[in-house]
Length: 207
Image (cartoon, rainbow, N blue to C red; front, side, top):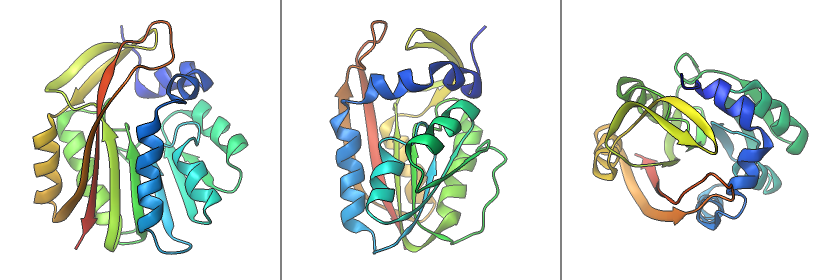
């Protein structure tokens, strides 16, 4: 039986960061966001993992970063590695935050172990949490799949779902967000049991 998101990332811990440490596209997308943000922006990092690279880069640049992750082990690591940001354990499906309170929401891969209905609900939350003019930056693996098991860095992940690229774009547009940046990037994680993956980065601005 496959692992839940919390179980999977509790097991992976720092191995996840090591596997993706050389993923230049991820850092480049954060760099783009940094160029767009006002000074001292309030940034929400959903699926914050080990705190690297997103929360660390944002915090070093002087932004107020709050990260949430479903994995207690990941939150523990992030607190050690990025002490200038705040990290809490939370399940995205039940997380409630004030509306229109964030200059940016970053969501690198937290949607993958949700159902499609939960993905839709999460995207709506992200849009609601943004201030007018705020930016949403997401990354995922854009495939046509729902509730499947996949092998990931030597572990079996359960309940994996996603959408193709055009569906994600349409979902954001339907929520009143203007897609301002879109990129596909291929990467092979640094792990003996990893194969190549093609990832989607999407950025959108709230009107």
